[in-house]
Length: 313
Image 1 (cartoon, rainbow, N blue to C red):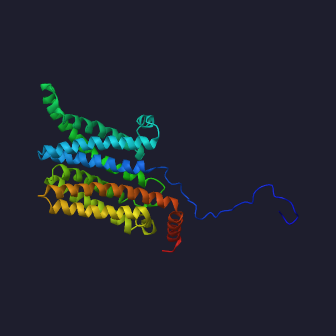
Image 2: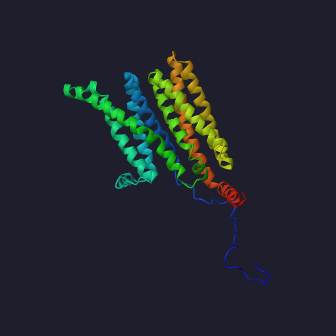
Image 3: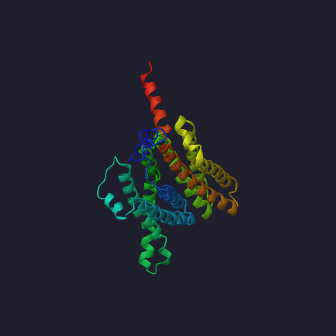
């Protein structure tokens, strides 16, 4: 009731402060996208592993890499379509090619890799085919296709880093110089993990060391050189995931280097690297989403840039 005894006809307005509300709209992505990032990287790393096995005449390494590459790509396609909502949207994106769009480029890279990886994996079935002609033709076709998949693999592993960095999420955008190193290293480490489980040969161990070095270097830079925008990667769920991934990466590399003669240690190292790669992708994903939800990560860096721009030299 008002002082004059009139009953208000509408409820009292509940005014909320502008502060505390997101300024940029967080990406409307679910964790299907994080799973897509991991499986795409695994497919790329496995194709490179298969090419290494092919070049060094290690059939178990080659076979494991080719089959894993196709399986991971199929899973990646599932997660991508699940995020798009309708399968035909993927098909529609193939109607145009726009090099300036990371999504358009990524769809074409994904499709080209899928054709090559699929042909290489099918060639592994040559010994089971009753036709002598097929047994003769499939291996060379698989060799060419395997090298083709390996050639496209670096683009498949890193285009998603460009895709995230091209969004308005502050911590993703700020990390654009280092994000490709993290994603490339994570892809190599996961492919090496497959190799260590299947056949702990020198190519798999070298991949593990190189992948871990790239991933840890990039992640360290992201977590320490972005000022306030590094915070989402070191706190909360993202921080826990990235710390766990870093620890498992170190354990996986140590096992790969020191346990080269022990199949059990090598397999456990491979499993550690695979798990670490997944945790890293989910941690990067969560860090970017968290930065978009908190207006501090948009306003404070903008004010700092404006202050630097207006300050006298």
